[in-house]
Amino acid sequence: MPHMSYGCLMAVDRDQVLRAAAGLLMRKAAATMDEVARAAGISRATLNRQFAGRDALVRALEELGIAECEDALAKARLDDGPAADAVRRLVRELEPSAGLLAFLYSENQLFEGDEQNDGWARLDANLVGLFRRGQQAGEFRIDLSPVWLAEAMYGLLVSGAWAVAEGRAARNDFTQMIAELLLGGAVRRD
Amino acid sequence: MPHMSYGCLMAVDRDQVLRAAAGLLMRKAAATMDEVARAAGISRATLNRQFAGRDALVRALEELGIAECEDALAKARLDDGPAADAVRRLVRELEPSAGLLAFLYSENQLFEGDEQNDGWARLDANLVGLFRRGQQAGEFRIDLSPVWLAEAMYGLLVSGAWAVAEGRAARNDFTQMIAELLLGGAVRRD
DNA sequence: AGTCCGTGAGACAGTCATGCCTCATATGAG
DNA sequence: CTCATATGAGGCATGACTGTCTCACGGACT
Image (cartoon, rainbow over all chains, first blue to last red; front, side, top):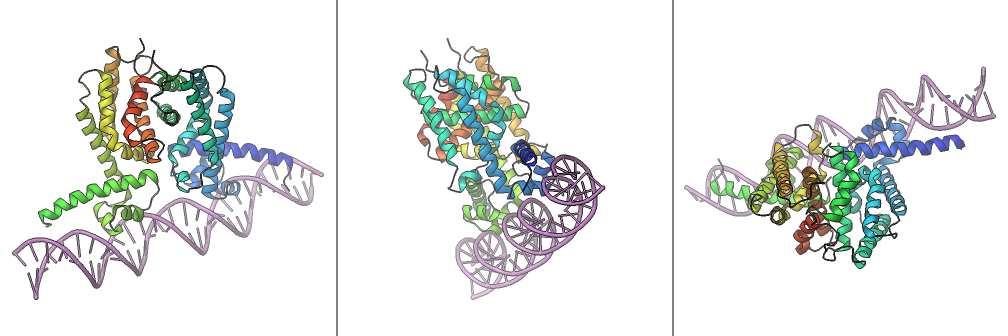
């Protein structure tokens, strides 16, 4: 039976490993388990002790992504105030998770097996609900479906993460450029 | 020496194979060469005769994507009329290529090898130029960089392709929903 | 009919990632 | 100090994909 201090350290390590894996896999989705381990600063053996196989790692990454999104949704208080402000808060809260989201976005393997984590469905429902609320309040245009707005927001988050990762955009502009484009579009307001 | 009719048929086949490969790889990026061959209705042997290895296939897919984008850019006449209309024309012309673009978007393997096809750079330059023109003409807002607008357009095309592929959006709405969101955003105009 | 050529099917070895194993080591607990 | 535990290093067997080969079949042209 492991000591409590060990258990505690393992939890920290597990999270660090997950972060490092996400950072690497975002840039190189076909990375070897050995590369992932090296990126996390641990050996392949330890990585395999913590995650039984690549599937388990990706699944854990998915769980982490869902948990972070749920945290962001909670912190953004989607039901408070104007929907546009809620969107801005949400994008800001989602920024640290953008890299992980970008990886999960490209990992369509997950959705291939028909059993997909229902956490995404819950998140989608909340997001769609936010855009629907904005429409019903007269804030948002009604010729774009809430489902599409949610999907587009996800896509813009991924694009933003890529643009920042490749140096095509400044990290400080992340929240602004995504939220402003999603809300206001490219055409100049008069 | 192959007969002319053979050469002609081979060209058609090559394109059909590329289409089928794009259609499959968009949904399952890790598909086997055998699966790709079966999706294209040919045997693995023939697939390997047409494309020497997986790399060659992906490279050919990339070439096809670039060529289609260049065609779309040419047909959209980016320099004619209001920039917003040019964007709408471009999205419409790009629609048939959206699936292929979605695959290439997730194939970050390409950009890992530092030698990336400069066709993308040319396309980027044209697209960025379009948004810059819109800004200079006072059509587009200037607080969003042309580079980001181009990146966002690419991301929205991919998101749209996914939404259509998963049945979350109607194919008929593709052009409209992308162009309108990119140009006008979610907030209702007064 | 005869010939050519593309194709499909199958077999083959080579390569690589994976998962599991053992062993030596260092660090922390008692 | 002694011991336990997690770790790193390395080896090994398995499985999957790949690239290439051979052979037989069928269609097209002469």
